Image 1 (cartoon, rainbow, N blue to C red):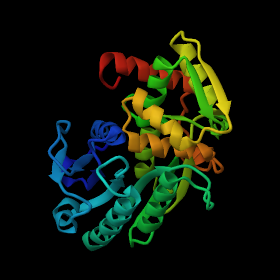
Image 2 (cartoon, helix red, strand yellow; image 1 turned 180 degrees about the vertical axis):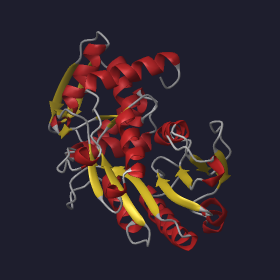
Image 3 (cartoon, rainbow, N blue to C red; image 1 turned 180 degrees about the horizontal axis):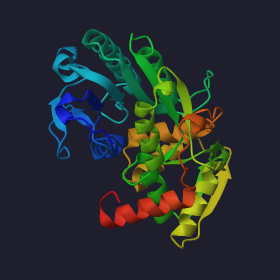
Image 4 (cartoon, rainbow, N blue to C red; image 1 turned 90 degrees about the vertical axis):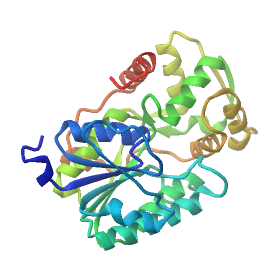
Length: 308
């Protein structure tokens, strides 16, 4: 925790501060004594001690006051599931606007949380867009840290909500063959630890890191273990003829996840999301949370309606 007077500290900007990751990150930064500025498009409830600023990445003129005097910015925004049009187009423009404004403001560091996946031509639209945003941010004169995250497990996250609802409502699932794709789910608490750790470890500046949990499993295994923790039986039947797009329609019907988000997440099942590079574990040797413990924490938070 920082010991200097709060007004003497550099400002840490969190874009998308009201989101699943942003809310938790802001609370942790405040807990550690940082001076935090929350940036959102509309007024939201910010934790006590945080400054709030309204700005829209698609409206460049709104960014100058938001980025003034900022030392480090967390880039946590994406347009998936927001309004009409291709979210990738919006994310591309938002990243370009931010990069120009951050350069003009003299920001020193940007920490970006994107998606983990292979970097070839077969990436899903969602993962390809996340990678493109990283490349745009890396063109700035500031130093960009790019964290490539696997599936994030936590109450309020789209992936958790989708899996939880499927397990609750569909004891028998007919799924596409990509349900056997491997992934490396990571607890949201570990993601926050990495995000804050990158701020505090200068050696992470300008680097790209894969972040995942301690276990590699298939999506089928993820759902089966989730069901077991809730005392449920689950039958999953993979078939080769069911496409991710068709699967996303029934996911949209039986879960609270928006159809546009469900389509993007289901499409991403075809891409393995496992860590190929574990260098970050040497720089930030946090104790990674086992998958079952991450699910138990998420279920407990869901029962209480808040972060534990």
